Image (cartoon, rainbow, N blue to C red):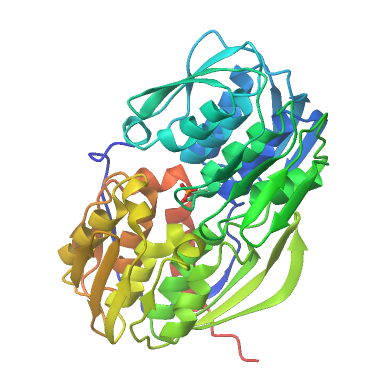
Length: 444
Ligand code: S3P
């Protein structure tokens, strides 16, 4: 996604009212295709979250000989090649913008003994750190080459050794790469120790597929597998795609919004705890399991917010929502300080600088720290103006929410970056704007 792509003006909205169902979870959609590809037989995925990132995953497994049939927009049938059956493609596999794809696939490819693969990506992905997966996979015995810790990633699959590995950074992508490689170990179980809990979709899905997994509060162990079989996967709505709407409805006075069928895995919903501390009114109801994950519906009412502090333990649980926390903070009374979030600098953009620059451009008092940011909020409406997304989907959605709550509207640079995770975002927003103009708040 280029930073020069089309900009879009998002105008203020009087209030947000109605019901939404956001598309399927991106993290789980990636994993379902990848595990389906190394499963035995057919995996049927419903509620698939279609986006540029997950399309790259479909293309990647196809490049390795896996048949994927698409039925309509949200249903896929993946015919797995078995754990060791991926084919060596003739050319490099382009992972586009997708960090989850490149890192998780690296773990799988490392175990495809005596086959060679090359993983590449777009400009943003090519600037992101890959040593964090290359190092543990090399320890396990894979042949790995990086370009000075960046893409392209050259992988020679080998019979792998089990390791016990303490992650230097809290990263679900790196944890997942090692666990997936651990399926191929020839000599016993592989353990990953986490500095702080991160999203656990891989562990959950591996268990469903029949792998032996032991989970402890600070670590996960996986045993080598003979075969995996996932069967059916129902992908819940993506909490990270629900998040912009949750923040918008909290900030626009008079709003009341319901979001249905959302993944409420506690390793993903750190934003709820942060917003609640700030004074938000969000409740969950109809709690139920969706595709092996805790899910449910959310009801959000507008509420005045106060500033808060967010520290390292909470960061992985809200990692992709921290730009939205900064926006909520801009509209809250008092100061908000986020620390222990240096990982934001290794995302699709340097999300500390990008968030602070975007907010400042809209008239907010914000300051970058090495490991986070500080925002001094002013309740009431943001001024608005122009902001640059830098081609980062999460920043483009932040800009859109800022537009809704602003006085003058916000012109979002490279707004089409939303397609990386949520291609229908602006259409859903336009529809919500229309229905909000005619709907009455639910009276219960
Ligand atoms: C993801 C993990 C997180 C997150 C990313 C998706 C995943 O990245 O930011 O959007 O699907 O495992 P890290 O593992 O690098 O923190």
